[in-house]
Image (cartoon, rainbow, N blue to C red):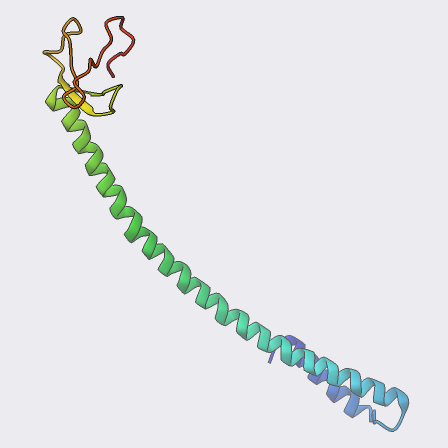
Length: 140
């Protein structure tokens, strides 16, 4: 029993000890008020029990969500790191320059060491010049 229930039980006992009965107007009023307080005490206890159950349930859900986040995002982070590392290795190791054709959008790769801006570079897809002679298109 909660503290509120104990206090209401005390008041009920006190009313019985003082011989308060329903024959007088004041007695009916006091007994009715004690009954209302008793109902409030019961409701309060039920609410406390429900809140306690819900609190435990929310803690379980929180734990489950944390486990899911760890499983989902830690694997993605590892894969992203590996992909990023692989991309770094490709850029450093292959010596290629990536460029998008300004006419058709085809991605073209040029050998970094053999690349010469003085040469005419044609797109393998649309066969147009990738770089204008006036230098309007710069390599990436």
